[in-house]
Image 1 (cartoon, one colour):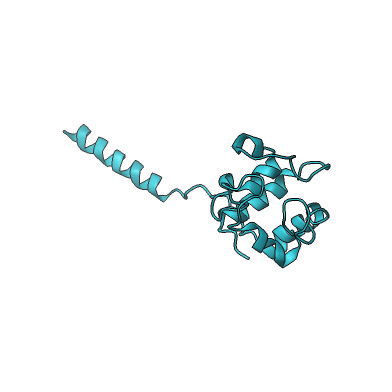
Image 2 (cartoon, helix red, strand yellow):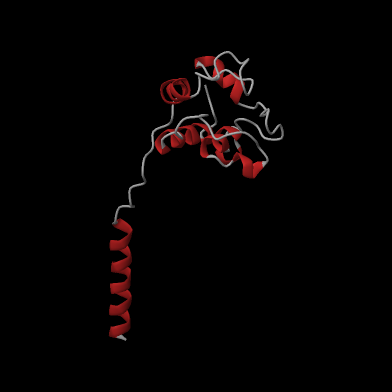
Length: 137
């Protein structure tokens, strides 16, 4: 009987010690700012060809104008897919075009930026995070 009580006591002590261990630190990612993080990527890589909205794709990707051409707007190449679906980067045509998966989803044309190297993975990750966070201005 003493062994059972001693065993139960050790088990309780082990559980108490385990409960006091700190939880593993979650990797912290600060929120992505449209103005500070996304606009510079668009202006450096996209605005040359998408300046006024009259060019290919029918959109301006310059500063504050870009968000109105992106969020909740259907793609010209695949009208059933929104350019940016707030909260859903995997359903956003912008991400598909940047990652080169647009053809797999019924799109057409080239991977963006046209004629250049694909965006750096960290830039695509920022755009994905901005969309996942709600694609806010």
